[in-house]
Length: 288
Image 1 (cartoon, one colour):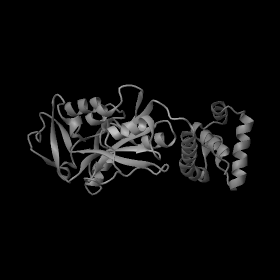
Image 2: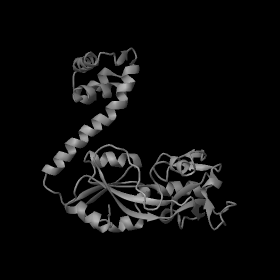
Image 3: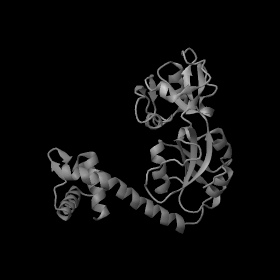
Image 4: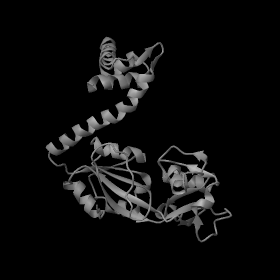
């Protein structure tokens, strides 16, 4: 398939409009219509209904393939450009909020850094497509086990840190005086669903055999302080790395004692590093 036609189709499907897609892509509306007609002829199936504009069943299936295909093409272009260009003095780091541990922040150069705090799942794609030189991702894992990342491009990961995890409770919570907590005992508690600011609930479910941890409130942001304020106000529990959970006013951070998991942080990059990215990786103590 011609990637230009595929990108046109994805844009029309996303905007549900031929005219809006034409404006975004810089084409005429007739050119957009011709792109869709050519793609439909190539595949031998209608991809869009016209009134209203919406994907057909075949079009929905194509959309499932189109995102990863176009991302992989963008990643390939960025990788070649990165290799051919002269090394830059600065660097752009994409990081999940809880991956910015005190050790990671201390390792940043004094100048020349652009820090982008992104949702956890978007960091590998940012590195693959060249919008970030390096990424810092994190999550729950058994000690020394690597994280599972989406397969968006040939990426290299280096472990840069592990620390214990804690359940963040309001100071008045009945469990706040416990010396430790078992995750399975909290499966029916009220939890904060904050996939981009804390450790995501699906990771807790996976660690607990795949069940429990229904959310009481969903927070769609990346500010860890907002998440901890919600926990302090009793809106739900949160699981956080010890460094992020300790010292929050109005809360108690109780260590998780079972299962035996840690908060793991990994550096994500493409190929061999040089210049500022290589210096940061060394400062972080990156190891394969």
